[in-house]
Image 1: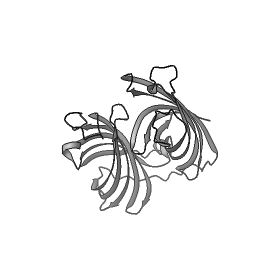
Image 2: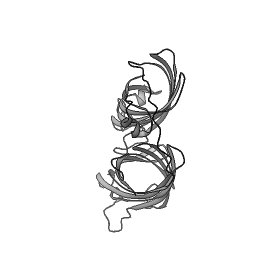
Image 3: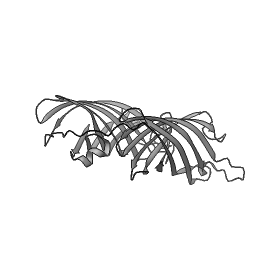
Image 4: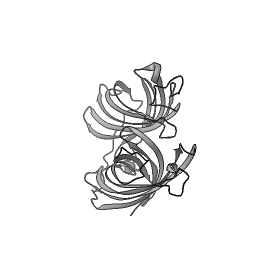
Length: 298
């Protein structure tokens, strides 16, 4: 069950933020999982960004994404709930992406069908942290307080040159040996090139110095690095990238059965060259950590 409030502004400044008309909103969502005795339920407050991808007559197609905080009433406990290895922190993070199709019934009312892909985890802040990816299908109705009249702005011409960039990132990770939290910092070097107005492809290299792998000896191996390919959704000032990476080198005691990992990053352009945001590193469906990230596009 979900209750949401969205707002759209139609001025040119808001259009330039993503070369599209878009909603910014808040949503309050309640999920009851299929095994409530173990998994319980989740209540989430999240912010959302929803650009309109297509409009024609009564039809509208949009793509919502967002993040927020989720309260989980049943989490892992070694004694009372050992089967729940998905959630171990009552306050966790929610990330979601959701395509929507609307059909206008009247001037004020629209019917809506949406597919939601959700991820809940604590970003590696507490273990165990398998996290949960779960799809849902939604049916609903929208009531518009005001019916928008869309201006006819034109998008910028496609710039298909290569855009090289440099990023630095940092987080604090759990060190099980020292029973404390330790820093992990790294850098990414890459480039991307637009293939459509909102899609770009690219790749690069990144390396991480991870102090949470330290066992307190002089021979600690704390470096991992790899190469990646990436897809970028570019909505004006926003860059949402999905990166598939292959380890070129990593410590023997770090993810010994994994050769690949994924990283999902959302960055906002602060100026012509500078951008900032956050990213999440995962191995398959298991989230490892969330990082703060700064970047410079040349």
